[in-house]
Image (tube, rainbow, N blue to C red):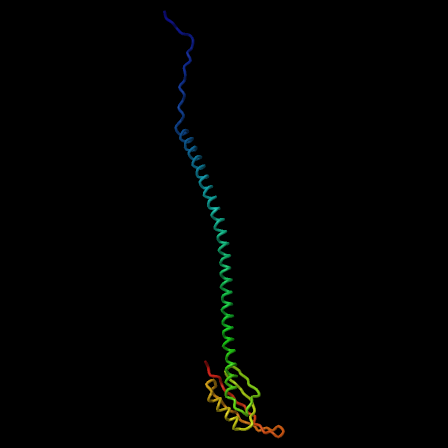
Length: 180
């Protein structure tokens, strides 16, 4: 007997193989998405680090600018102080010269002579005065010439003057102060 099976047997169909280019495309896309995500995360963290460093550097720059201003103020104050110190020292030197001049004038002034005016301009001195005799005036000129403080002493003449019964001689002398 022959048996014939009239029922159809359902055969399973073999699934078709997915083409390789689709698998490759999906894998490549997946790899690209993962790489892009990693690159985005990495660059975002680098950007945050650089922004933080920028803020730190900006605060450091402002601090340094403030310190530079302080140093410049200090230097300008130092220069001002040095100028003032120099001026004070120069004034002390200049102050001692008139004292020396007057002291020397008083020490060489003979009896019978008195000074009426004295003017100092630079190192030149003009003296006006009166003496009882011509000899007293000439002695005063000689004493000035002998002095270590004065040079170029010149008597520009005397003039006889009378006031009441007293006869006096008015004189003008110029001289220079020695440097140093």
